[in-house]
Image 1 (spheres, helix red, strand yellow):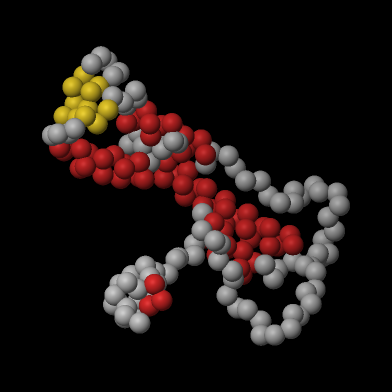
Image 2: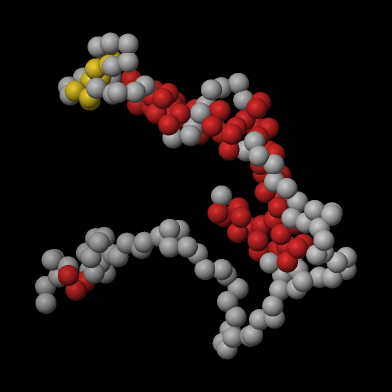
Length: 177
C-alpha cells in the first residue's frame, strides 16, 4: 500500500496544495471502490489472500492426522510427532487476523469525502496556494527517492579466496598467511 501511495504522490507533489490533495483523494477513492466491488462480488467467505493461505495450508497438511477430542478441540499429529491441540479452527484464526470477507468489506465501506466542499467559506476561486519555494541544495540533485529501511536488502559477503559466503578473506579459515 505504501508503494502505491508513493507512486501517486510523485507526479502530484509539484501541484498546488488543493489540486494535489484532490488528485491523491481521487486515486484513493478509486482504489477503495475497486476493493469494495471485489469484496461484494466475491462468493467466498474469505479474501483472495486468505484463500491462498487456506490452499497452502491444505497442501501442507496432507501428512497430518486429525483426531477430534470434542466439538472445538482436536488432536493433530503428523506421521511421527504430535503437532499440538489447537484451541480455534483455522477459519476462526483467519477471521481474527481480518482475512474474512466481512472484515474486508468493513475496511472499504466508508466513502472518502471531497477535500473542499462547495459551500466552504474561506475558499476563493482562482486563488492557488502553491507549495513553498525550495532552496536548491549544493551538489548534484538526487533523482531517486530514498527507500525505507524495510525495503533495503542485505548483501551477502563472499570470500575472494575460497568463494564461500558469510565471510571475507581476512577471516577465511582456509587462507594460509
